[in-house]
Length: 212
Image (tube, rainbow, N blue to C red; front, side):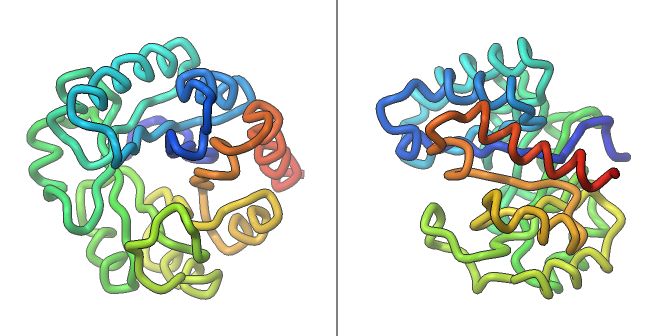
């Protein structure tokens, strides 16, 4: 069963893109601008530092009324009381995550092909992340970009919330939404923005127009 959460604007953290700024402050400002989900994804951090950052972001997200999702690590998600976990194809299984985190956890799964999307549609996940939609320098270990055609094809395979990730920015976001995405996962477009608050507001303005 899908949880009551808003997938529209999904911030994925990256300390490198934040530069000298505190990542917690970047996330806090982006939430004020309209971010609706936050994923803690920091591949370069050791376990202790990752857990410490997770606790800080948990409080930032709670204060902003936004769920915090932990990338890959079920144990950390459980330890800090995160809202859920995001899994890749090579991570722990959805069943393992659900057994560990319980029925109320938000569990997301990345898919890179139509075959993976078809399988994901049958699993106990709360959202599916199509990745990558466009080429992106922030993740170099991904499959060929799906493009808007691939995104539309995945949309036809599932009624689950569909989040687009990979090269998402304010210039292509409208086309991504029109292709069937329920949510936009942004990394550099939010974390590296001069003003994360205003960047988030720009994305949210597309949502308002789409309901006109």
